Image 1 (cartoon, rainbow, N blue to C red):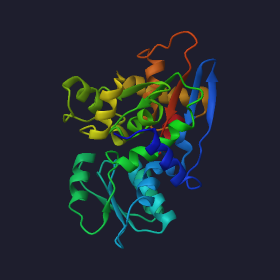
Image 2 (cartoon, one colour; image 1 turned 90 degrees about the vertical axis):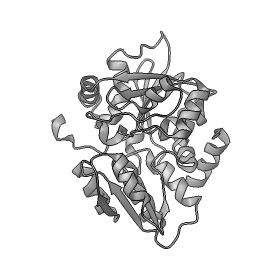
Image 3 (cartoon, one colour; image 1 turned 120 degrees about the vertical axis):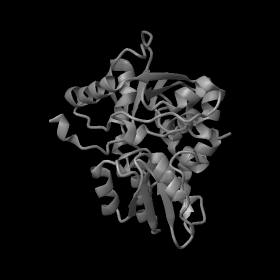
Image 4 (cartoon, rainbow, N blue to C red; image 1 turned 180 degrees about the vertical axis):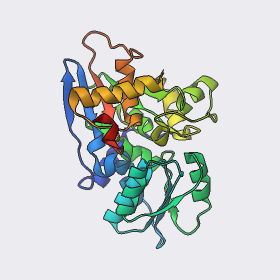
Length: 295
């Protein structure tokens, strides 16, 4: 099981290649971890850097399936480390993400209507190193390095969950130091369903956050860690996510994608009610969105 030692090793490995993103206080007991300011616009750059640096990469480079953010992280990390990258994304991936993938120099293959279909196509690709978007030890350990940057201020950490690569890393980094709360859309709730069923299960995927939180099944690593740590899982609906994203812009001038706003929606909707004096850190984990509807 991945633990704090793995996360600390990843932190040493990727030091100097990722941003130590800011933490800002937004209220008496509320902080935002501004991980959406990470290279390529999401936390996944940490995991992808760790994966590539800790692997023997063939001449054909790397291949990844993604709803968008893992692909952007892969494209950025591959460019910085001088290896080719091929990214499979669903045809429903936001154009802002597809355009950025190409700008970063990745070969983009669009197939299927959701992540699971892009994943199936990517796994048929031979000759390159496959980098799983979330269910990979190196990815998880790398993602967990952001937890080390909030360990001194958090009683509770709110984490948006798709396939589980971020929350798995946060659990590995902080399980002995903070309460970790998973937040998922009602319409894309792979971890919540797995915890209820006692094992990872397939779930239907839809809604405003499906492009980043739309994994059909939670990763085995995340399920194992979440079960062992007995974390709490909360659900929020699309209206709460849209409202939270709008509030982040209106109140703080922070622009994030809908999947990222899900974590904050736990607070704004009342799904999570902190105790008096409870220090809560909300992870704002991705910014690859079109901000036009926030104007």
